[in-house]
Length: 275
View 1 (spheres, one colour):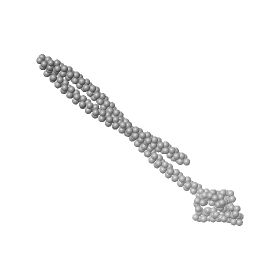
View 2 (spheres, one colour):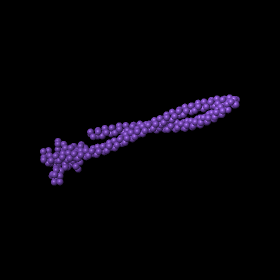
View 3 (spheres, helix red, strand yellow):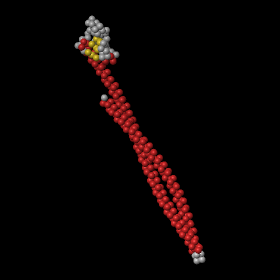
View 4 (spheres, helix red, strand yellow):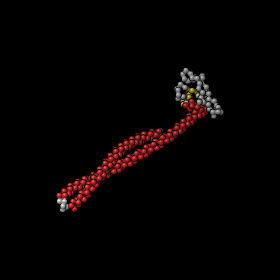
């Protein structure tokens, strides 16, 4: 066959054919006949060997002289077939390497697209974290405003209590004056009536102050509820921020690992291209 003919190494000495597959397969150049189908040259024919591995003088078939034109044509033809086979194999290997290179480039593009998607997701997570932090700051600012308002209401409540105490003291003074006026009823009826009117006004002021105190207590209770809700929302926001940070760290670690694997893959591809 053509493969056997190409794989045979020509040894010019002793005019023999020797196969690289086995040292025992030694063929003698013989029975070379012209043929129109093979451009006047036929392949060497394997003949039985002697006990020493070479054919004896009686079994040799002539003519196989090294200087024979037919021998030279056969050698040239064999070398030409060997070169053609080597060229065909080199072309096949080149095609295979080109296909592998294309596949590697496609995989590289896929890996690059995946890396860009991971970077985009990490950026989105970072932006979401910033938004949550901004919302947390706004909630803290609102909580501080509510705390300041609560302090103002407490201060107003203290002032109202002071006014109530002052009104009660004034009422006691008025009652004492009323007692004095009752003792001097003959000369101070008009003053007594005025004092009673003032006492009524003081009572109204006291009732108004008490109503204001109740409103202040209700507002303080509402602010206390708002503060509790704000604390719960702040805790939830802190938990979300911590989870988002952990997710961002995991995403960065995965992106770094993929980047390192991509660099290793690129180095491997570069080594394959160099080979």
